[in-house]
Length: 254
Image (cartoon, rainbow, N blue to C red; front, side, top):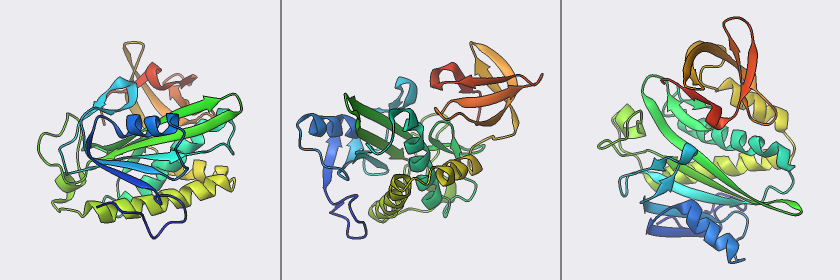
């Protein structure tokens, strides 16, 4: 299961499959620290018992039902200040594959996959390893609910729960990795404007008035864009614009 991929150039030529682990990101980190990490390596796990999400949340999955994996990348061709471009590329690459099954799938800032009104399908957690010379490695952790229909967390959904069908995890994995590789190559070629435009075109609630939680207070505002550093840019009802980092603003519902 999850053998070396034949339909890619470099991504997935080294696949480590684990029946169970705490976190694929943690396992990938151990490989990097051992000095044995190669760009394009993938750690994939059938049951991730302590998967990590944004804001320190735990990403829980049912064994054998979903896709949880980590890519080991070396985006040293980017400046540290351009970190969010990697987030954009990963988010839109996943969305491009999954929209064939869910046409209304959107990217919720910074990098969740959501179906409006039905909840969160998947999430991304990128852990960067920086050195004196800049960006050394990026561990791109990805978790997508595929065939799980029972015991889904609050505000979560799965491909199967939304469509009523069951899916071949390995085939989906191959499709996702192939698209991620194409996106990474585009990033390496400097197609930053194209990647940014794709991200914004699929951004959940862009230009829509909605409620947000800011400093424990609910406000009415609309998303107007993303700053070069990856901050969420919103405009309130009196026309004031503000930029927010991950822990500074929350979506109240989706």
